[in-house]
Length: 408
Ligand SMILES: *Cc1c(COP(=O)(O)O)cnc(C)c1O
Image (tube, rainbow, N blue to C red; front, side, top):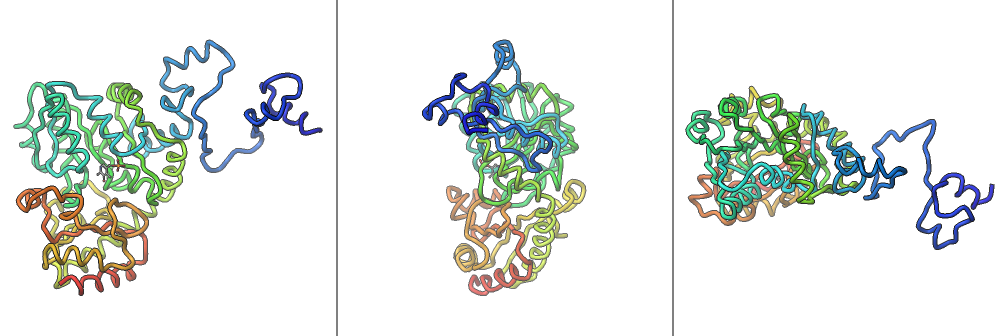
C-alpha cells in the first residue's frame, strides 16, 4: 500500500477523492482508529472543536450539556476530570475550571444577585474574601461573617434574602475545622444551600456532601493535582438545580479548563490517596515534635490534642491534613529567618505539593492586615505555614530543626 493509499484509507473524510496535495495533507493528518485495544491512561483530547457528520446532530449539540462541540462547552478529557472528582466527592456532576478561583467565582456569581445575602466563615481564602468584597461593592451583596464552629451564629445571621452559606473544611493558615454538619443543618432548615471549599482536606479526608453541603469547590492546583505543575479548579454538585445555574454562568464566564491541564490533574489524582496518607502521617509527626521545641510557642494541626476543633476534626476528618501552622516564639524576625533557613523545604506559596513548602503569612498572603486584623484571623507575626510533602519525615525534621536553631 502506498502512503497516499494508506492516508486515504484511514481518513476517508479528508478533502478530495483524488490524492490531496501537500498543503492539504498538512492540515488533514490521518485519523488513527484504535481497534482491539484501548489506552490504559486517559487520552488527551487537546483539540478544541469537534466535527459532525449530520447537521441535526450539530443542531442538537447546541442545546445539550453533554455533547462535545467546542471546548468551552465540554471536552472528553475535561469531562473525565469532572466525573472523576464528582465521584470522589459523592456528587452527581462536576464542572472543571481553569483555576480554583474560576470555580469559586462561578459558584458565587452564578448563585448571587443584587441585594442577596451570604453567610461566610471569617477565616476565608484571601481570593474568596476579595470576590465577596467586590460583589458587595458592585452588586450590594451583603455578607455576614461567622466563626464556622457555632450553628447558633448562623441561625442569628439568617435573613429572608440569604442565598448561600459558604465554608471551608480546613481554614488557611489556622487549620480551624468548620462544623459542616451542624451549620449545614441550620441552613437546610431555612432552605439555604451550602458551599464548602474542600481544598485543604481533599475528598480523601472529608466529603462535605455527605455532611449536608450542596456544593464542593476545589483548587485542583493543590492536593488533587499534587505536583505543582498545573492550575485548576472543580465544583461538584449534589443535585441538578444548582449545577445548571452555575454551569450556565461558567460557560458565560469562560474560565474553562485546558485539556492538558485536566489531563495533568487526572494524572496527579491517581496517587492522591497515597500522597494524602503520607502527608497526613508526616504532618502529625512533625506537629508533635514542633510543639515540644523551645523555639516554638504554639502549633496548630487538626491531629493535635491541643487543637481547638479537635472534637469536630475527629468527627469529620479521616486525617489531620498536610498543613501545619507554627507560631515561633521570636515573632516576625524569627518567622522570616525560619523560612529563609530551610534547605530541603522551599519558600513558596501554595500547598498540597509532593515537595514541602514553607511561608510566612504575615509578610506575604496576609501582608495587608495590621497586627489586630492578623490576630483576628488567627495569625501571629511569627506564624509560619508548612505544607508537608512526601519526603522522608526524618529528612524533613532535620531540616526544620536546623532552621529553628537559627530562628530563635
Ligand atoms: C489556592 C486556593 C484557592 C484558589 O485556587 P487557585 O487554583 O489558585 O485559583 C481557593 N481556595 C483555597 C482554600 C486555596 O488554597
